[in-house]
Image (spheres, helix red, strand yellow):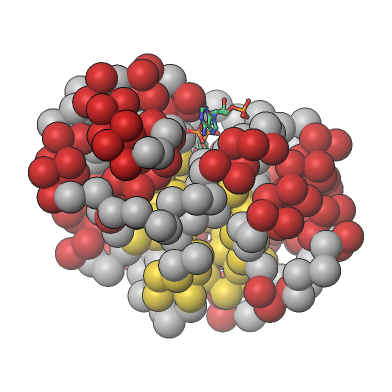
Length: 274
Ligand SMILES: NC(=O)c1ccc[n+]([C@@H]2O[C@H](COP(=O)([O-])OP(=O)(O)OC[C@H]3O[C@@H](n4cnc5c(N)ncnc54)[C@H](OP(=O)(O)O)[C@@H]3O)[C@@H](O)[C@H]2O)c1
């Protein structure tokens, strides 16, 4: 496993395991499998409704707490200072943990304009030692600029949709300039067309690897953190086998050229669902 050092000195595995759209019971089985394979970073959220299932797998595992890196997120309906503090306590209880490693704002939900107060609650949790690091998801450059201006703690990362068809170059540049990691959600484009892209398949064949492994490797070599999701045991293993080969700069460029600025999810400005 490769670790990255976040801007507050905390170390985080560059490859983690996501559990969006995984039922609570299934989350226990999938996370148990992931831990067995060697993943130690797990990405959940209140809105996934599987924090309990994730917590059960963590409790039953023999991996020591200090070796785990657990991320959860505050949902749009819990924005605001007091609401966020309450929502955090509820997440912690469902997870059965005493702290989380990373707490994120799930979406900026700009229509409600409460993400600054929400972030201030994250800062309090950070200062109180209930979270080791804080950050955001789906923040566009103007949202980040506002946090940098009005808050004290620089987010350690921005978790955004990112894959070869949505390479997020401008946002990546902005984040790099401010020492904010980019973490890719839907890194495999939700198992979509990118895994059948001719260029990706050709590179995969050259290395005796699968298209998914090539796409994950592309993210890693871009210095992006990745959290692929799978409930399929063989794929959970496959997605972990990405540290034993390297893409050439020509191969990296070929994949860079695939960008279509094409999203699977909504644009952050439009995601105000509560
Ligand atoms: N912050 C946010 O707003 C946000 C939004 C979306 C996601 N996320 C996080 O990011 C994580 C990953 O994103 P995601 O779940 O949307 O998409 P993803 O990881 O890009 O893709 C998951 C899909 O790809 C399939 N898959 C996994 N490994 C594969 C492989 N080796 N070969 C072929 N297909 C494969 C999975 O199928 P099976 O499961 O059937 O194997 C699943 O259908 C989420 O689980 C969640 O933790 C965050």
